[in-house]
Image (cartoon, rainbow over all chains, first blue to last red; front, top):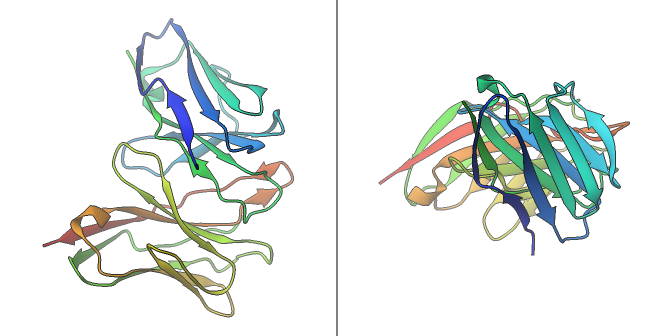
Length: 115
Length: 112
């Protein structure tokens, strides 16, 4: 079962709101990722967690705050976002990060609209 | 990190074989090559992965020449439902982990 589950599927939030995107996997993967995808563009890497520790932050603004409570869960906390942050946010996981042959599996994404 | 180059778009007809080639001239020794398919408003779906020569699964084949500077995804007998964006990704390992980076992708359009 190669499944990464993301909730909510759709989220509309105001620029002063605080919300969170959630991601869950039960494949025993120890690496988890957040990507951002704008319309008609490829996904862009935001964060990588390896064994529940943040290992890569692609210079993402602090209004995006990732959290990995345990090996199965990954959250993305959102605060004071801008309309240009509206996008599809993709969570992904892989067995580990130490081998480029480890397949990365993606969830279906959370559509975020900032108004 | 290895950069990939793919055609922006390709057109085909149902029942035909489609070959999408990806160039990755600076692929590293330890890099694997992975292809993903993405439909609108959905997450990328893993298709196939390989290191060298040929890999085949139930949906596609991946051909990698000896120098590994390119790869070709082969989709046999495509159907309308294969209309999607196809991404070729290479390696991505850094000291902090796997920075798998997407290129522009190839928009495949299949018609009747």
